[in-house]
Length: 223
Picture 1: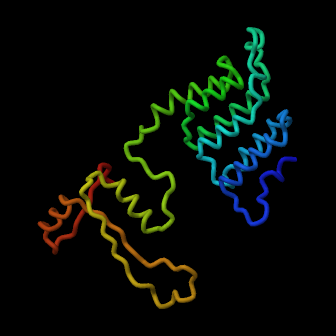
Picture 2 (picture 1 turned 180 degrees about the horizontal axis):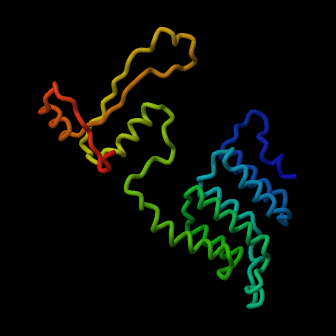
């Protein structure tokens, strides 16, 4: 039923602006927010198509689709028996997709969750866990890689070698050859290349080495 909301009209592209327009139009034409759970699940599935799966403001806008103050438990019994479970599961699904794409929730996210579900709810519990573990694990990798990896094989090789070599002063060298004569009919042919990296210590050791003797490279686990 809500699929038509995410179909771009005319020559409009599938971008953030068209996605935001679809979400805002749902709230404008549906004042009572009927079917908001199905709409949010659909919007979560459509986010990668529009390239907004890593945008915090879009997730906050999706949470804003929920009616306010309706799903908050009013007494202990409602808290024990999961007040409005389907809506709470939908709220957790929004946070889980944020978690999968590495999106850190903000103070606005917390304010929206309190408005919608209250402090004693499963979405709020999920939010608190994300705030705890995201801050601890965000920079735990000592060798971080870019979120969007380059598509060029040469750039990928350089990036991989940079992570393999601990010496920051190491120099990357690219030996690139011309295309062979039989590759004229290929679409977008890749030029043959060899990518290497050497630290100053390695270069000095090779300079002292006798060229008439072979070089044996031994690792920590000899074969």
